[in-house]
Image (tube, rainbow, N blue to C red; front, top):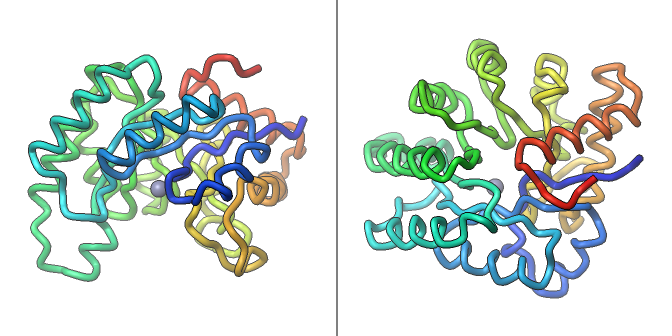
Length: 255
Ligand SMILES: [Zn+2]
């Protein structure tokens, strides 16, 4: 079995022609949204391409949404609760804060709190962009909330990692696991039963993927790498990752 699910991809970041080339690459795609228009676009694409399973959110590495946009995203999520599989991509602005150390985090934290509440209300998992100390903060905000979390492209301390495992949170690994030592260590430490694979496309990768348009087929290399690091049979890794993602996102119509 070589079936895969891309657990995190920005389908709306590809042009029409590139989107057409994506569909054959995986059995399903968790299509994360970056703002209100992005939610709407994913909804539209999913009508034509049922492999796309949309998630609605607002990417944290930008100015937080206006009250009006936030309300619009919430209303759209409630109206299409049957069609969306999660709330995401949401989280905290790690890279923005790195560039502007004086950045006021308050509005970002407030926005994330609202999304956590929305996820709880709609009984959907949440897809988080929260790395290093932000992952710690996100764990804090999720405490005692009845929300399951997927920390996409996770990076962080062993301490946070242990807490995430204790809470049965999921992480996902991108093709950079082929050349990033930090991610290889993470794969060693994180249990396969709480792991997924993703591209975060159209984000571009280096190493063997330098200069290539990011495509879900790259995930096959990630799976081989995971199997070799964890010393588990490749076919078992395929099966585990597929089942994890299918179950986590309650994807219907996939066997
Ligand atoms: Zn993303």
